[in-house]
Image (cartoon, rainbow, N blue to C red; front, side, top):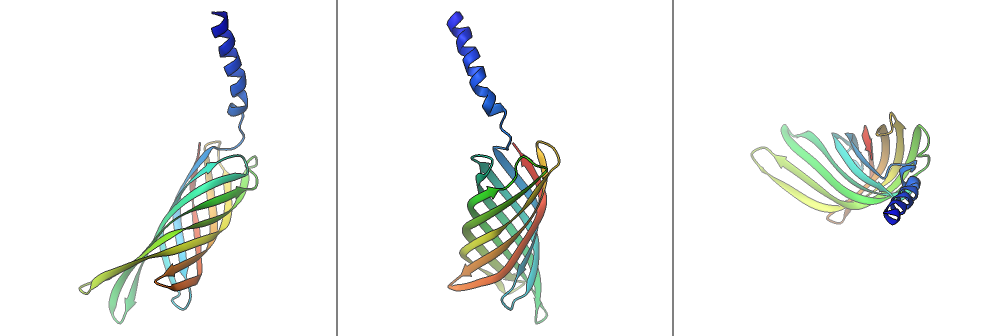
Length: 177
């Protein structure tokens, strides 16, 4: 019985640093996204952005980011419904997890799917590569909730053609665990 009691006390004492962690181990973000596609197209699209982040310590983590943007474009009197989805991941550097405002930067790499359909004429799609460099800030509302604003430079490459004058802005809610 003494051994069991001693073991319980030791395990409890060893768990104190884990309970005292001053950064979230995981974060889930969901929000609105505005995407500007440049390179002569100059298309503005609206959509959604979601990400999951696992933090290894208070400075470094890994993010998986998923997004979708949609736009109906009138070309010669016909409406073309365009959509672009991205799925990317990469490192994130947090600059101030202890404070009310936590700025961060990230570099994300992955894939993208571009699709378009013309009513009565069919549809087409292609897959490609994407990379996003940017960052933003989380404003802590409580221990478990924050508001996020972020801006990213986005590069797309579809069928050998690169699109580099793209900007993505997102705002939303972060759930911290």
